[in-house]
Image 1: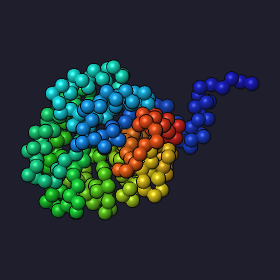
Image 2 (image 1 turned 90 degrees about the vertical axis):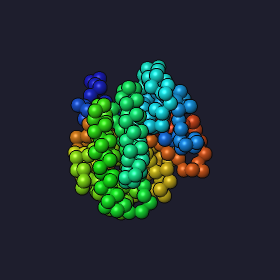
Image 3 (image 1 turned 180 degrees about the horizontal axis):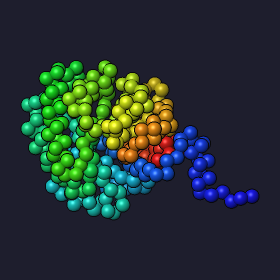
Image 4 (image 1 turned 180 degrees about the vertical axis):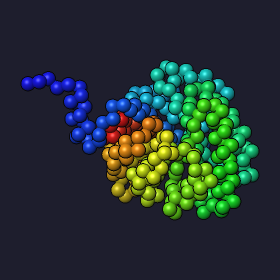
Length: 292
């Protein structure tokens, strides 16, 4: 009997998952620390960065995505560099959210963004996923104008530091037939997207259709799972989102960005295992089911 080759074993693996292999790609998979931040005052993770870096490295992540507040302390750059080197876990970028539709907030937002993106570049970050702010109602056309104008200025700051700005959606940007997002895209058709697959599902948007429609804009994506009743699962693979179909759509559009696992738990949820184990389970799921 002929000894199986690595190629034949890989082919069997992908056949069993329903995902076609794409040997030319190297999609990296990392994690965002929201699940650590959620229960903490002001969602501040700076005091537990050691734990977060150690857990993500142990779970097999390729990178870490920070939250912008982790870069606020004056010693943040040196500390994050040290942790990144210690755990061999590069920083890919950071999330950042603000009420960008409020014109009166623009000066403050620009000043803050200038400072934190400078520090982000110093720790090796190359992506900023921005959330434009929830008005808790439909924004006016004037507010959408203000939002787009600020995004242009933020993108310019990021580009000057080798950072790609992309829009990270929650439900409010993509509910009501994607009104908020469409308002931004009508004004900035070339802006990049970093969709959150779970929030798309939560807003009733088919993620496969979304990926196909925005194929030329997507540079990044967040992954999370939810059960059929809409409640977040403890780890990926314990919910009902069809990530095999998501992976097929990403390959169909020739996606060459990176993916971040961003776990989240309901407010009153008591974890049944350490967070690092849920991260590891999620990382294994992405590898086995999505092929990354």
